[in-house]
Amino acid sequence: MNSIEEYQNVVELLKKALEFYANKNNYIDCQHIHYELFSLIEMDAGNQARFALDKIQELENLNKVMEENFMKEITDKVNNVIDDEDNAVIKSIKEIKDINNEILNHKYNSNNDENNNVQ
Image (cartoon, rainbow, N blue to C red; front, side):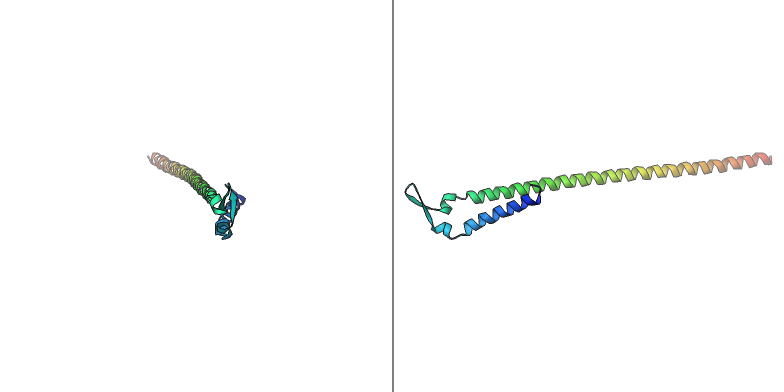
């Protein structure tokens, strides 16, 4: 059950089950079955309620699975973004170090050239 219509169907089922059990006539009116009188409630023996409760349990289980899957997907995506950002930061730091080393090497070489020219 992952669509709005399915949720609406479950709500409608619950509504009908509640209406059935709330209807006083279902407790009073009797039907002839095998020469005995039974009310609709006795004939139903709780089947509608159990069916509705089973559907509620299915809905709760599916919601739990969907929530767990959603959280896993979000966590995986966030971790991937963090890994990508970490890699980009590390790459930038390495590039800065390389540039810094080039500058230092250039200064060192320039100073050596000047010292050699003075001698």
